[in-house]
Amino acid sequence: MALDLSRHIAITGMGVVGVFGTNAKELWQWLDDDQTNFGPSSRYYSPLPCAESVRPDMRRMFRSGQLSRAPLISQFAVAAVHMAMEQAGIDTNKGADVDSIGMVYGTSNGPGVATQKIYDDFIEKGASGVKPRVFQESVFNAPASLCSIHFKIKGPIQVLPAGANSGATVLYQAQMLLARPSIKNVIVLCSDELCEAIQSGLRALRWHIAPAGDLSARPEKGRGGIMSEGAVALVLERADAAIKRGATPLVELAGVSTTNDAFRIARPAEDGRGLALAIKQSLDDANEPAEAVDLILNGSTGTSVDDLLEDAAIEAVYGDAQPHRATSKRHIGVAGGTSVLFDVALAVEVLRRSRVPAPLAKTTNQNKNINTIMCNGIGLNGLYGAVLIRRPVW
Image (cartoon, rainbow, N blue to C red; front, side):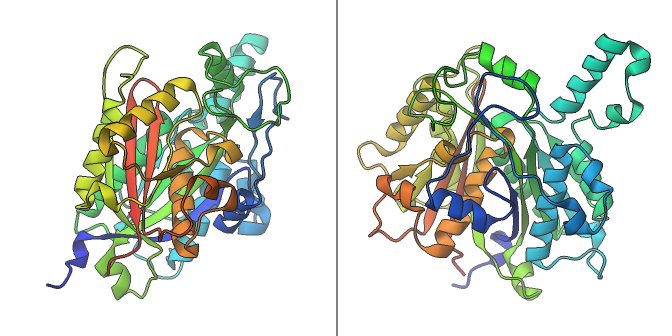
């Protein structure tokens, strides 16, 4: 029986910006070379380590200096979308149907830097000291709006500030947009920027690794998280439409689920029930058995709460027959809402190269073919997601 490719979703374009550089090849090389770049922020004072993103060269990329004056969160977003659309072969300046392109944007702390600037100016200088332009940059949809204007996108745009689980949330929503016949492509985007106020708030929650000692040291299991930043953009489309227009599918988005255990205020259920349900639902969405998963990219931020919760969830689903697991966060940090999409980008590269980066291979079986990868997401207050990526079955 022939596959109904209209019911399969292809990822045909990908753009990434992070501590490692400004493309997926650099993400792979960073992990394969076992690199880190953790240290104090160069933009504000904090005793806590973080991972600052490479700044994309907007002047070179767009031959204009205008975008280089936008907030970093928007620069990350525009650069990632540009790369994703270019790889997918979609050019809105050369005949692409701008009305049929939608966008779903997710973020963790959004324009926190702009918001903090408003408050700082107000406190230090009074109401007259607040710059009018900063206000328009302080709304959560600012990066998505800038992308839609720059790339002339006229389809529906949705903004989902879903915390560290934004990546799974936007992919889930993108599936529903693609169910509309009028939508041919959906740009999935997550972007986050380091913010002093957010980092201080997380410190109060004891989320970070302890500030004492070597700030460049990579976090160990259960020690805490390291804030990072950057953006990932993906182009999604129905597989039949992608093949018809001559696009090359990178991977298939096989299954997505998001859950919320609503267990207790600011405290998730320790038995991992919310994440376990997300994993099961993503498998159901993909019509795959649990044993089909060859590799799990962990969603834990590195805190003891997340580590124990994810261990419990995976044990609840798999028992003793657990897939191999790995994490990218010991090398690139926790990039807020972008973290899940960084793992999706890594999954694309793993499937393309048929191996995992060398440092991550310590927890995997290199003799096993990797065809299906689960990317987990864990947010504060019991938000969970699971994304199943696999080699195209067509």
